[in-house]
Structure formats: C-alpha cells, structure tokens
Image (cartoon, rainbow over all chains, first blue to last red; front, side, top):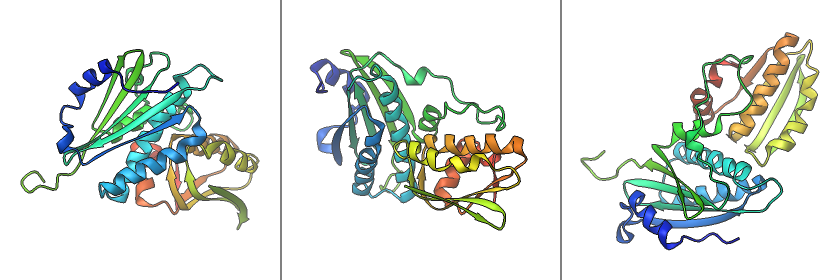
Length: 169
Length: 100
C-alpha cells in the first residue's frame, strides 16, 4: 500500500504549508516506514539528517527526534489493525522560518490531538505507565494539526526555527 | 543500546549505553528484570552514557521506581546530560526520582 499525496490532499495541505513556496524551501525530504517500531532508528537517522542540513543544535535535534518518535510510534501502534502491515509517510519541509513534519497514513481515522494531556504533576504511585507520547509532542513542537483527507490521516507538526535574519532574532 | 547491571557498594547499578528508544525498549525491559528483586538494595540508574530516551524508556524507569518504592529501595539517577534532564523536566519525572 503505497502512500502518495493525492490532488485533494495536496490542495488541503496548501493551507497549512502555504509558507512553503518551492523557491523558498531550504529542504524537502521524505521517508516511508512500515508500522513496525523496530524501524524507529531509521526515523532517527532521517530526523538527524534533516537537523544536520538545517544546522540545528544538538539539543533541538534531540527534541525533534523525540517529538517525531512519539508521533510516529503513536501511528505505528494505532493506525492499522494489529498484525496488518501499513505504511507511514513522513515528510520534512523547511524554510528559514520554520520546519514542518507531515506524517501521513492510510489507517483508521485517528486524531491524536484529541487526546487529553498527561498529568505530569502526579506522584510515582499515581502515575499511569503510559500517556506521555502526545504530551511530549505538544511540549516540543509549536503547533500540531490533524486532518482527515482522502481517507488518510495527516498530522502536521511545526517548529519555529530561530531566525538567522537580523531584526527577527 | 546496551544495559549492564552490576552490584557496587551494596547498590544495584544499571548502566545504559546508547539510545533508549521504542525499538530498544523491549530488550532493555528484559535486561532490567534483575532489578525486580531489589529488596535491601538501592538502585542507581547510570545515564552517563545514555544518549537519548523517549517515552518508552521513561516508562521502564517508572516501572523500576514503582517496583522499588514499596520494597523500601531508593532509585537514584546519575550522570544525565542536559538534554536528558530537559526531557525529565518536561515530563515531571524530575520530581519522581532522586539524583546523584
């Protein structure tokens, strides 16, 4: 099951990505992974490559790795029925101002942004074992947006980049 | 990812080396099994060679803590770099553990 951007999806994403005019983009890259969490090191390699090309510092690179792992693992765990193989497309686009990751799958409609935040003030005894993933994505990224387009889940994560231009710093 | 457990000065020390991500978590969970019987020992999670942790790894740390506390054992974290510390701050885990 190959995931490609259909016409309608492209149109829809233009709303989100209108800042990503082709001539203005510093980077456009993508990777397709199966819904197998053993492939997370490949995602890390992809994110590290993006961060290196954008010359981001190590701290930011680690946080982006974390946000992407949490968001993608969530899709790997929940988008497709257990035992069924499905693909996940991860795209990175950046200009001087922001870096946008788009995560697309053809699984069940699933809006991770609708999930309630984890309560990080609870004691060890009260803490549930799970539920931190999307919370971390929210903490690290500047915005998260979910759309269901053409029977695909489209999750868009945006991170403002520290501007290099004087006056915006 | 590699996890080694040793006994040092009466403490059980788990040393983590590498990236504790979702892919590495199942094996790491197995390797942490010896910490279950920690009665009479404090536990030190040595993170000086840990490069990265995600929520799957944090979950393992919390499991160690939840098991150790009722047995009267302390769980200390040592050697965390600033990036890891940020993750612990973001998630409130900084308040759950003791640090060395």
